[in-house]
Image 1 (cartoon, rainbow, N blue to C red):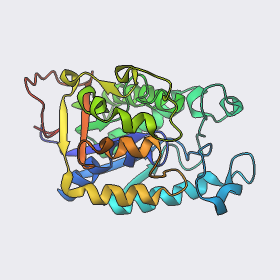
Image 2 (cartoon, rainbow, N blue to C red):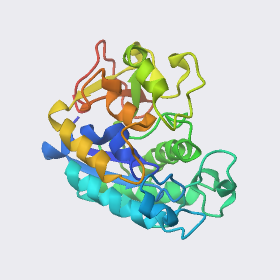
Image 3 (cartoon, rainbow, N blue to C red):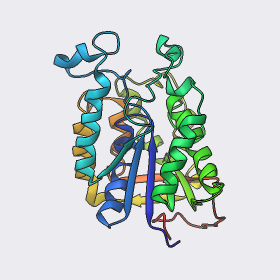
Length: 284
């Protein structure tokens, strides 16, 4: 595949680092064009910095702007300089968790009409012409409504870009970050002991929405040399990520694999390929 350009499509600031940070740093360091599109500002996020709690959505409602500064700082750590907000900053809003009053906000990304978002993202696809797109699986990877919508928008935008009348672009491959069952099983004690864990009541790690059987893993990116950069990017998201939380545990592979190793499964788009073994490069 000739086009070595990578497009990451994420829901909130910090998702880019948690799920794909080392991968992004790995390819950016190789000179691959890496573009990040973030769909919301994460206005409904938790705040783990005491002196910033008044930024919350039910108080000053300024968390989104602060998280944008965190996103830019994290991307500097990862070596990313093409960072975009879908439709511009503030077009779409963090929906919050299912059942929250914020679901009804008129700009809530996960619950709104996605047609405009698809058009906006398709325009980005046609502009940057990625060979590979990274986004979430059909279940949103974490089952968050904004993540589910991000998957829908990304896949529809790939189709729309390919079908454009005058300037089509066909993405060759798309992948979703995942965590293999064998690794999570080994780190289950740490995962279930982590704080803020919405899945703490599950008994079977195979039921976690981000876990796949090992045979479903299509690509393993070993970006161990960029593991420290990923950790620095995680630290840049200070309002959202504490080292005792479930997301930090996942981002650091539960201590089973180095933090710079990230796994992906193939999404149904583009060329048909058959990999009898797990690939180590998206562009092979």
